[in-house]
Image (cartoon, rainbow, N blue to C red; front, side, top):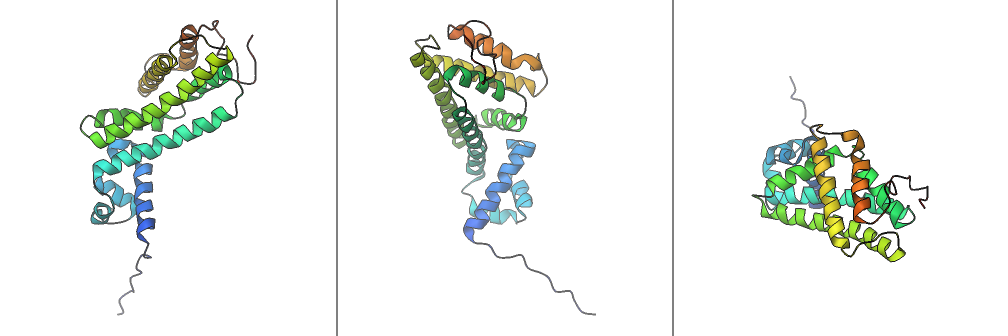
Length: 214
C-alpha cells in the first residue's frame, strides 16, 4: 500500500510571512478584541507554528501595539477621507459626530477599550494609544480651528473643545457596548453639548451635511 504524498505548503518570503502574521493579528482583534491577540491564536489564524510567529515578531507586546495602531489608523484615514468630502467646518463637525457615534464600529471600539486597559501593563501599547489619541484630537482641533477662522464657531480653546469631544465620544461608544443609556440619541446629545461649547444655536449641528444652517 503506497503512502500518500504530503503536499508541502508553499514557501513564502519573510515579508509575505510577516504580512500574514500582521493580518491574522488584525483580524483577530476586530473579530474578538485585542485581548484575543495571543501567540497561539495568531499562529492558528496565520496557519503557522507558534515558534514561527515568535521568530517574526520582537515580542507579543509589540505585536499587540502594532495591531492596535493598524486598526485605529485605518479608522482615522477613513474619517479624514470623509471630512474631505464635506464642505465647511460646521457641516464637517456635525457629520463627524453623527458618523463616529452611529453604532457601526463596535469592533473598533472594543479594540480601543481593551487597549486602554491592557496599556496599563504594556508601555509599548500605551505609547501607541497616546499617539493615536493625539491624532484623533488633532483632527477634531483642526475642524474647530477652521470653524473659528470662518466665523462659524466661537472658542478660545480649540484644543480643549477637541479633548472634551473626544472624551464624550469615547465614553458613549464604550457605554453602548453594553447597551447602557439612550444609545439611539447619542449623536444628537453630543452635538447639542458641542453646540454649547462653540457658541452655536441649539440644533445647528443636527442638519445633514448637504443642508446649510443659518
